[in-house]
Structure formats: structure tokens, C-alpha cells
Length: 182
Image (cartoon, rainbow, N blue to C red; front, side, top):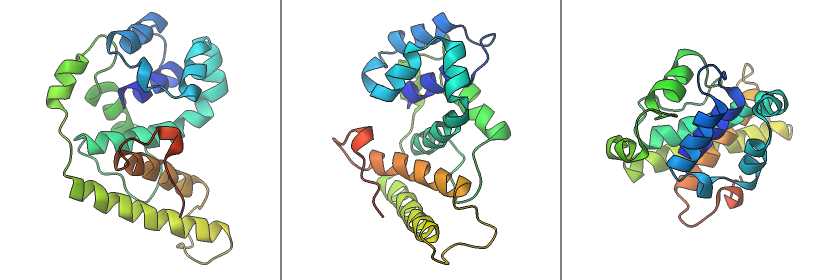
């Protein structure tokens, strides 16, 4: 979760909030490099302005992943089935709740980090699985969604939230190998 946070900061946060060096120090100082995917590494290898220009439109999907992971770790706002994660709640997660460069250490954060009971995580993952299945069915022509539900943008959010929850419940499975079949 913290490695993903650093990638999101690299792409989306203003450089006047955290410098390139502060984000790199956050990754190194917290030992987050081993948690990066190959895609994350390629994003972080780019100059920050290039990463912003190239990946800003896609980083929102990663923020959906981040929200679900943070909820598992005690963030108070539960991911739901509608809309994108944005606005004041997003800013509160990214800039206050998560440690960030030069703030709370990973060790202090881990002491405050409170995993939700497995039962709660399983219940939300099951709901996201069912919603993901309905989205996929709608994308194939089925009448499985409310008329005002966007199967692309809201369906994409469901996919990313489910990805995080399914991964959390899949010990030993890498992020890129998480089974998201419906």
C-alpha cells in the first residue's frame, strides 16, 4: 500500500508539496522498493514531469486500489459500488492518513495500522466480486446494471477495488497474478 502511495505521489502530487528527492527517500527509507510492480518501477524511472504527463489519466485507477487497501488497514471510509474516489476523502487519505514523505515513519504507521477482521474483508470482496460479475455481464450485453450505472467508469472502479481486496485475501499471490475472473 505504501509503495503504491509513493507511485501515486510521483505521478499526481504537486512538486511543491513533495520534491522528487523526498518521494525517492520515502521509497528507500521505508524499504518499499521490493513491493513495486514492474509497471511501478517503469513509472518511477521516468522524470516526474513525464510520468505526470503520461500517467495522470490512469493514476485514478491506482487510487481506487489504494482506497481499498487503506480500508483493509483501518481507513474509515468503506469502498462502495458507485462513483470514483475523489474530492476531500481522497485528499484526506493521500495527504493525511497515509504517512507520506517526511511524515510518520513506516514503523509508527504500522503500529497505528489496524487490519479489519477477515470476515469484513471477505464480505466486501464478495460484494465487489458480484458487482464485477454484473459489470462484465453488462459489458457483454446483459441487462445487469441500473440504467444510470456507467459500466466503464464505475465498472472500472469496481474492478480496481476488487483487485485490491482479492489480492489481500490471496496469500502468496503477486499483485500481477491476482485472479480477477468472474
